[in-house]
Length: 395
Image 1: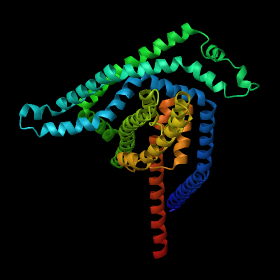
Image 2: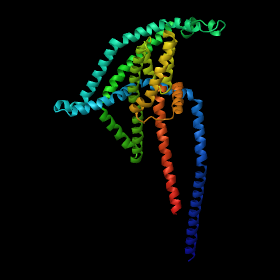
Image 3: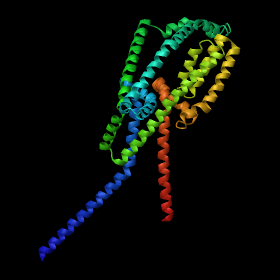
Image 4: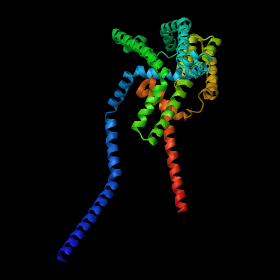
């Protein structure tokens, strides 16, 4: 009997001990949950501080990454340009009654597109490039004359009167041999990137089905089904935004270059082909590119053709830019990239400040994608809040 009491007393003690440990653990868990937001906030502040403290190194690392993988990135960029014609030709070849053409539809489509591209490049090099080079050399040689013409418009006591163009040339070119060496290296690197990018793009277009299957298998192993579906959704949005921007802007820029060149030829503006090409290239930079191109063309026309011709050119280009911005470009690109103009200008300036011309070019699709993801997150949170509010009402 005495042993039974001792056993019972020992069992009661053990039970109390277990209950006490559960209480302590639950208290500790509550304390941990209480301090968890503060801990996350402190870690976020540390990460933000270290990021800002080493921002230059981070940007330099990103630039080095893009520099190393530039051939592959250039190849992907070529794929974005040529994917639609390759896909359409592949569907056309698959409908052929000849088995050989139907079986080799993908290879024949890639071969046809690249042959057409080579033909276009050959025509441009043969007929258009000599005109552009001649205009560029003539324009570069006339810069001192245009500079003197501008300086003559200022009063004699103006500060700019004492500035010599040769001083600017010496400031910009302190060592011609070093600049020549860097130019040769940049040109060689650019040629290498173009050649490797073309090779990479051919392999991607030929083997795109296996590449997509490979990444789908990897994502299936690494991520759960819900995460994988969400990731595929975001990747689809990325592909849609960037592809729409690159393909749409390319077509619109070609239209812009051709129409501006025709307008300048009709108005008998000097360097019409060169100025038209500049307008087409500048059109890739939303809003700011077209505006800067119009101002540049008008100033050159003022120097080479007089005030009346410059005013006519300015009015003609403004009218065309309004037609292009309100009718042609939305028709080509659709509503995929419709964002606020102030946000476009801010993103272009920021992208150009940190990543140069490429940053200005890619700023708009990146900001558009971030905007879509943010709006999707806000919509999902609103839907959850509405569902909880409805539940509270019924409760």
